[in-house]
Length: 413
Image (cartoon, rainbow, N blue to C red):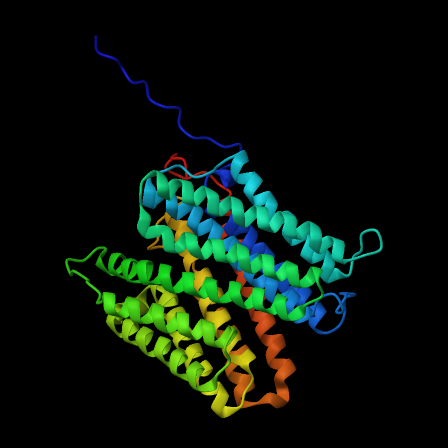
């Protein structure tokens, strides 16, 4: 007797923003980018009651940019992309809300600390609570992704999983440093997380940037666009970056730092040459990715020259953060949010050009102008902060309505 397989129940969620992770995490990341930068402007100028004896305000800012903003974008991207890569359904609905809730409660703890709020007469208790939710958030995300990857035996994704495990370790070191009043340990945890995220950007960017350019330029034309890549470049970039990461964080030697940073820059400049096509400048969703990668290359050059020219390490680090985290995530979110909500990636909102232009201004004002003129350093910082806030306000205005609505084709996603 022949058995009939009934169709499985289609996925559903109580609100479209909980359909897939990119919706809620991209929305929250953009709102948080505005809120945390506004708060940082007050902290930076000494207008909050943050307890600097418990935590250096610079590390407060660094932690929330890395483990708050950047990790939210990574969660939104990975928990969506893994579904595409493996075919395994990722958390949605209330399960997704639970994962997001851990991230949100962690951020509220850090915001409260930044404002100088106290619980039972102490502000550090807010960070203790944040530690629990932060580690639950990263641990749950890593477990969900590993389960899907192992289910379909896609072992090539294990490198991404290893980085998530190390991000959990890095965040744990941050909290360990706070609990034990060891700011050096906190610094190591923040930089470990930052460089791991840059490593993720280099890894994922290697896959998606040429793919997006090929697809974007081939649409509506008979011209076949095939960009150059090579395994040699992949291995060289990975090895140089790993050596750079170790040198800058654990073994500060100016000769090794210069050689390794220069190696990362040169390899990725060669990549960019192979990815270049003159028509990318006609499509903002493509040139933004290209400019982000170019900014990362320039930042590695700044790392290489820093021991010899005498400017601060912070200049190179902020250049890498603005291009590799800021510009790259904005470029990815503006594209992914269109494609995965069933809208045309060839007709983005007109505001995207302004968003990308503002992020370029952040890079110029925070990195290049201080190198040329330190006498107006505070002014350059304020311009960069204002441009960052304006960029994400535009994102919220243009994209939050799309992320909160059902797909126009009626599909789940």
